[in-house]
Length: 198
Length: 198
Image (tube, rainbow over all chains, first blue to last red; front, side, top):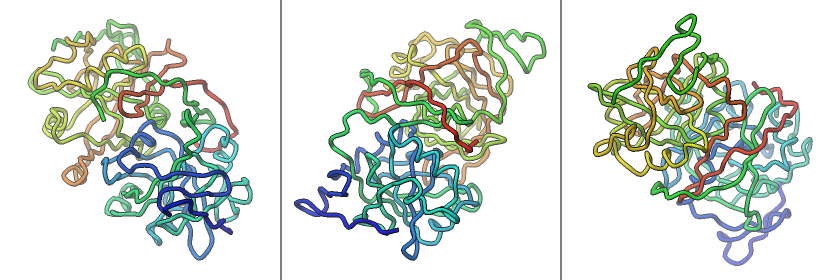
């Protein structure tokens, strides 16, 4: 896996050029709005210069700021081993244009496949963690594991989001949502309601 | 809160008539497909004949069968107190037709409002737990708390789904998904992909 070196634009922590367009920094206080609707995500991990990708739907916000995320990862996966060892990952949020790659990553194991190469995804160097961003995804959350006390019992990792990136040109990202057995719901219209919820 | 008595149709654990149409039993092995896409849900709790409703988006599947669900509930809410005391709740899954009630339940507290009455929702007696089902929701998951070890630290409850109900007449339920600050995504089209994921 050869991550493209990012080109910082202006202050290094506000904009990056990934080779798949420029991404801007996204406020940590608003990360919940990316994960709460339940999109399928791609989790990247890496060790010794080798990166892996896992398709994941079992995640929840746990706190707003800093954003704390809980996620459940099969203990038979390579991602489980890498995350336990390195304590770092990136949560990448794909849209429906990447559906074939999302399913491909879910159907295969990093033990036998270089998923970046197999599914033509573009790695980009992260700012705060070792594993690469997937530049093709519209948003990327750089995370570190902050609690593994529930890992043995539930395969549950508690992550803190250290840095978030978003593609500012994507106004209505069509995320995909796993329904099981090959079916996925594609994000539909947005409605506005008089909610006092953050 | 006066829950309507359910009328069982045939074997008591396979179909119920709630006064808002007949619901059929839904296999526990398929519950993950209801929660994985990340819908906003309504959680019912009850104590001493008084029921409450809370709007919730912070939940994740943790295991397939029996279905284990993790959910994060604010410790300032009445639902937190009732769930901690009674160890029982129902996760009710609403569709966009109930959006006004969903937001209303999120904007108010059960300490001052009878939410069933205020938002014209129909309680129905559950089969395995004390809190009522919301008959108006297309699916209902009767749950018991099985682990509170993460509750003090993260407001995280681990639930086991004991019984699941679904409205068999609703083929394409338009669930709603919280984006924050009054915005909700409505479930769009369904696509089929060659996924090996369960």
